[in-house]
Amino acid sequence: MATWWITEAIPIPATALVPIALFPVLSVMDSRRVALQYDNQNIYYFMGGFCIAMAMQIWNP
Image (cartoon, rainbow, N blue to C red):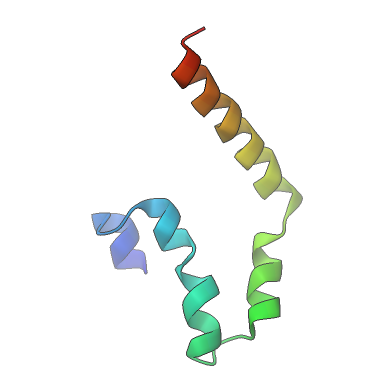
């Protein structure tokens, strides 16, 4: 996964979601524990900021 981040072989947001799909399949963690790692208040703040930034880019204020 680190190689994918560095080389951007696939888009970075898709790379960030790889653990949700692969960790349960590879028996690294169960899906509930993996999903809880993505449930953080700061993540939602960043997502909201990025959504606002995308909207501003689209509408050119």
